[in-house]
Amino acid sequence: MEFLSHDEFRRCVDRYDGNRRNRTLSCWEQFLALAFAQLTYRESLRDIEVCLAAHQSKLYHSGFRGPVKRSTLADASEGRDWRIYADFAQSLISIARPLCADEDLGLDLDATVYALDATTIDLCLALSPWARFRRAKGAVKLHTMIDLQGSIPVFIHITDGKVHDVHALDLLLPDPGSYIVMDRGYLDFERLYQLHQLLSFFVIRAKTNPQFQRRYSHPFDKSTGVRSDQTIVLTGPKSSGLYPAPLRRVSYYSAEMDKRLVFLTNNFSLPSPTVAAIYRCRWHVELFFKWIKQHLRIKRFYGNSGNSVRTQIWIAIAVYVLIAIIKKRLRLDHSLYTILQILSLTLFEKMPISSLFSEVADSMALDASTNQLELFSF
Image (cartoon, rainbow, N blue to C red; front, side, top):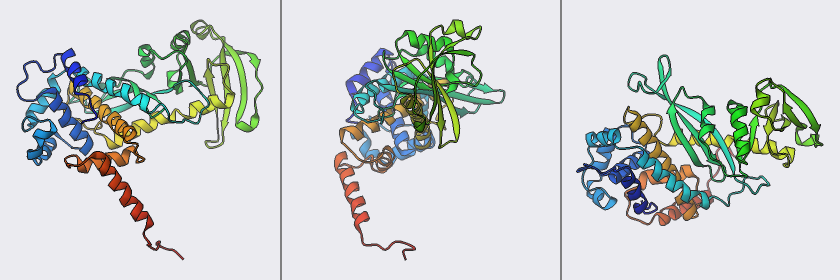
């Protein structure tokens, strides 16, 4: 927790008067308890209560003023504004992004590249009627845009499952000159033209039936997988008015997928293979969703209200970003998964965190250098 700013957290709490009428469990203690649950993958509020009680003698020095009761923690998650933890997570994101700015994406670009997508998290409709998705199914949708350098989320919007992915474009304020890569579910020419007017570039997969007219054909190298590189204008009765500017249409054959893909972009200076390479990087946001669903606690929730669900998701995001900050500041070569697994077993150990990972690295190197015969070695 020393990697977190208590002053910044206090400002977030004061912004929403989070500690008003609080006598037993402060916002900081609530954050500590739910961060502990994320790091150790606790199953329920009772699980959190029992596991923290097992370390009763160490709780005070960890920031808890007293024992944590599940009823008190449930009331806090139901009543305290989730925006406290959303703002705090955003402050951690602003710290993590410069630390990851030196990561190489393999793209010859000086601009920031973002990937935008959404994932659905199932809920029980009977317990969470506010999160209606289908007739007999509830869900929340996590609209997320990540900075591909470090896979750090820079935009997160939580809605019920019925909200279409494309509505997230109405909330974006991208940096001028940055790139946003999206799947074809975000193909809305009116919203894409708004991004164009904001001086941002986009790379999006095209649908199969757009009406367009070719203006120019640009030279390309077929050995790179590119099959065509054209400047087009839309000619559909609606699309031509929604996006009146020219577009670039790049057709690319993926040998790995044995499939032809067509991309649309408003950037006319990039080499056509780079356009395809940018879209290939979109897979990072899918890996981000897979990682947080597998290794953090966001598929089952400790409460059923919208406030409780949002609080848990935002604290999970804060924990993810915190691990990324620790990895960069301590210059650890371990993966985020390895760091999380080590922390989950050593949260209450009284030792410097850097020495903990150095010992793990030494033991892994020792295991790799042992003179052990391989199984089925002939």
